[in-house]
Image 1 (cartoon, rainbow, N blue to C red):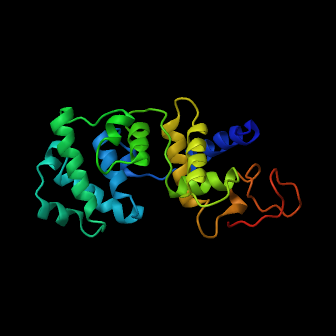
Image 2 (tube, rainbow, N blue to C red):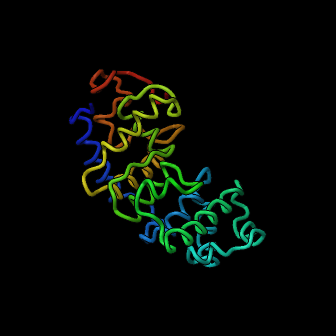
Image 3 (spheres, rainbow, N blue to C red):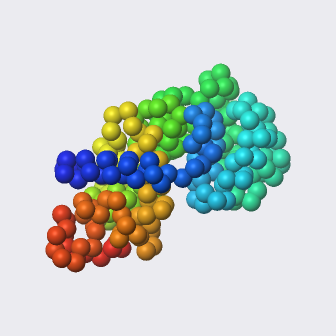
Length: 231
């Protein structure tokens, strides 16, 4: 069980931080499931600053799922270059083709429907459901996993079975009812800007008073005092 003493300030302080510091990104200006899916596939193992120009170019060339479904392979790869992991645009096209063929050109608005698509995993399905359809669906990318594991003191590799399961449970638990969009975006931004993999900015962290991994020197930490910042 997650303690209310940790959960409530996490939600409150993180959402307050997000209202002031959220990143302005073009895929946050839409609730179109297709555009959000494109952004999520592009952002897989690729930095935001590399995705930004390609996201706009890709949508100019393929503004709808139906347009993408008809894309030729050589042209599709050219438009995708130089993002790398070049199987991704082909998987995206396959999703578009199946959506047109089986769902009338509209992405499914359920886990089962999305996960049935090759190339859509649990994270991408959660992102589409929360960002496009307004559902209280959890997400767990690298930034979110790092933030949750530090704040709630989850030990071990995020890729391990039990640890991964615990992090997914936390990702679902932290969502205030009806606020998945905001809390999910907030966790991603906070992990990217404050709770970074290397040299996290613990001194200015909005969550430091209740974070189980904050490196207090005076023994006043709610968790274990004097622990290292990086684990």
